[in-house]
Image (cartoon, rainbow, N blue to C red; front, side, top):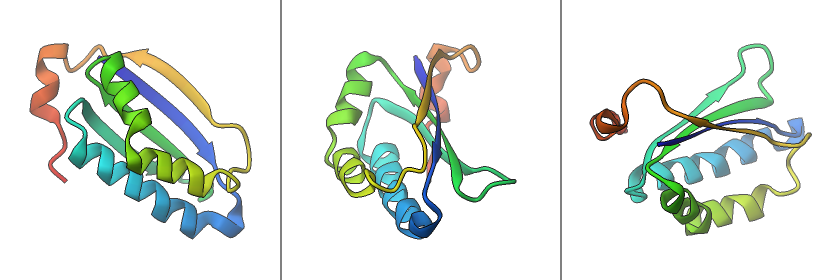
Length: 109
């Protein structure tokens, strides 16, 4: 499994639009991508302009499918000027749950 931990900071004046667009990508990822096993969006408790994503993909092909998905491409285009700083992405491997257990934890949102 491939896990991504992503930190994004948005410009304050674009917060609502940024989050609305991001949630469209999150829903598309969680609902429409069989290879996306998790897509969480969380807001920093001390800074409402910082969000974190936790994404889990079955493999590199699933991650590439996500990057080519219409909802992702639309979000990237719409939000491209709304970032206050560089996005920080950490590529990780999952330890728990085990690879075989990930299908059981796919969110039912």
